Image 1 (spheres, rainbow, N blue to C red):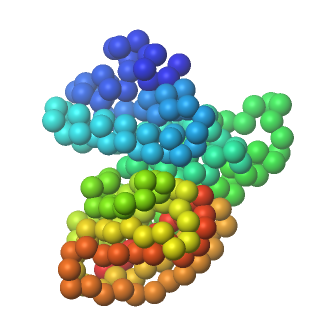
Image 2: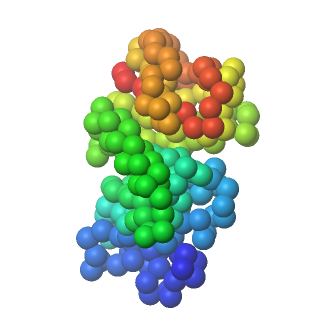
Length: 220
């Protein structure tokens, strides 16, 4: 019950370096049991741990898909943030834990709507060519949390947590012109879009709106 409480031979960290498996299910290693009930901690901690599994595989058996068979944080109290964080953390697939017989239809509707909005976003992004890239994000404001996927010389997507309008952060990107799109995951609405051009490899961005959950999509 939780990655740290699994028998050693069945923990995700062990399975990640075992040549007998073609993929690893890390659901128990990234759950709320591991990181507590704070949604930001779950989203950032889970992505960091998935990256640790990826690095362990790279050093031993080579890359394997990371699968999250069930997320226990599955309702309006943070389920959207967590599901999106799985893909921004580099998972190949993820799903909510199934509704129970005593759950209301509101939970089912929420899960369907959340998956639909994420699916629409994914359709515009080459996730299968991207890798976690936390090292390109720089901010002096420690209140901002970020999960990042990047493509070599290509698209970048950033999940921002607890961001406020006017806050600034920087990204290490290839010099050039980039199309930017700010998306509210809770509605799918595009809040702002523009193009930016820079001659240096460090781009500065200003957050356009107060959101607990916000996504920035960059295309060269």
